Image: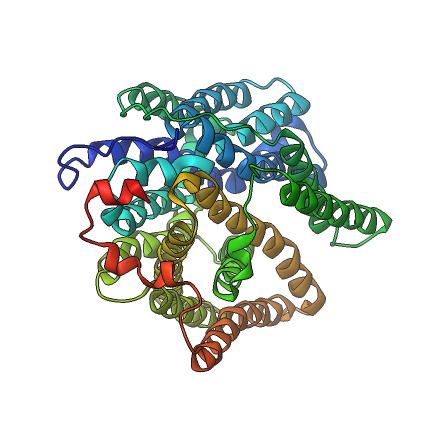
Length: 481
């Protein structure tokens, strides 16, 4: 058995406690959405020029995303429980350091450390959760894991809006430190992994991947507006990925096995995850500006409106787990993509006089679509990648999600700024058009998938399409895979 494997919990259908521990540790990562509503307070606290606030996001996201796949491979080698423990411990230290930061550079250092902790947690969170239960329960466990992840996204802008008002800018960090600390303490009670043969770690590949991902994210960040450094970062990113691919092809134990990407279905579903999250970020990017134009709407109330989308994910994730018992994950993913498009288009119908119930409903529909898609996506990816590489599978899912979000922040803002005019109605015209653009992305994915489905002569990924058939398999048969 691989070294990262963990003995499934006895009586797993009733033993939800291990999954709650993993969910608690993971919760601190999506709660970082609260930092967005803290920007104004941070600018005031450190007397910053407004453009400097971007480094709060860049330092964190760049660190997390560039290291996530490497951390996933380390989890496959050393055990998901151990990596999760490191992630929660480092996160506890990072949150405390950020909350106590005396200067802005010190805060940025804390954010880098926070990115390391988040990368460790997210890289192995899905793999750790599924390793604690029989393989037959994989889809249901992933659904519950995504539900807990979405709870963090819902609590971030709503609860922390109140905390910032009452306790100041540092609340978005200080209140997460004890949560991470409790998760760290409880994670020691999780089953220890079964030891297996040790495998070498591709350190050169890890360095090349981290460098390539970093340059790619910096290039995306510099697209608005583009300059000479944008082209330089893009060239370095391409060179880094080429060198990484060559390194992985010649090493015996690569960080990423590229063979699944030869299957069109696998490549398409990963690209779809990038594009779905690109379009979804339109809500967090532009909706706060729209809500700020509503007279008398408080910051906590605006946070509750923004929470509608992640609450939709909370509703949809367990629903996707139940649907997976009788339907193929590809169908669930298509339904989710269509609902996401419908919800974003509904937001584009907003008027100068806001109709909050319709806005909340549209965001909820979009969130339900994202929830259905994400569970189906993780099910497809984890089914296609060998069980001993589940750390890389989970990290791939989280990395493509983050890449989509970062790309969305750049592309959608470019669309919005290019369409906005100085006239009083210029904001609403650009707002509507940008959300229509965002809605067109998942709509195009649905059309493309349906066209491909009509031409598909046979399932391109038998292991993916047999996911439902695995339900009912014994834990021992799953381990033998």
